[in-house]
Image (cartoon, rainbow, N blue to C red; front, top):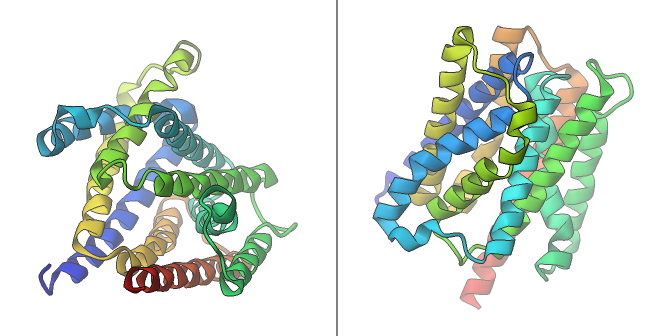
Length: 292
């Protein structure tokens, strides 16, 4: 890896975490017309169509088949549920607030990893989890703006994301990173199909620009995210996932006139610091295990 590789990885991660909130902002704009499941189906269908030829060329046609099927299907269900819940929450609360609620994901992963992954979690990481959940409570204070249900739905999205991370770890040796994204997209595209006769809203010509931007930004952001881990170590680039709170705040402020208040910033900051600390401890534990 070249000396510029880590810096390129960080740049790609920050770029992805800039594009994703803009894509989510488009989902919020489209939320008055289209249901969350329909938007998620559109996103994952185009993602699979874009990724399948690339994965087949890089790893062969056999890589298009998800294995083991039950675990791959479960992972697909989790990320589809997380995305649908996230888009649903956007109908009630600001973009930055919804983004902040998803930061509970790494805390959930750490909390359940002893049960599902057999990992040992030390007292320091447990303390970080508790501190992080205190940040969630600050964001969920009883006097927040918007509708309470939106924050609960956003929290549910974060929990699904945390369980999705657990499934990713279980399947870490099954697929290359691009293959993992492909199989998640496959189930995200297939699972909503039985619901389409009831939930599908015909695409409106006036929404073509937003829908096109929604799809393209999702694809480009996913490509940047995958390549960020190609050029930089996970322990280095992962903390920049939290750049999403900055970009979602800026986009939400300019487009929707929403700006998080002091308590939301405090709660989000606690969540971010707890998440970064957990990432650092996990990276250190992995290095110790590899050297030992």
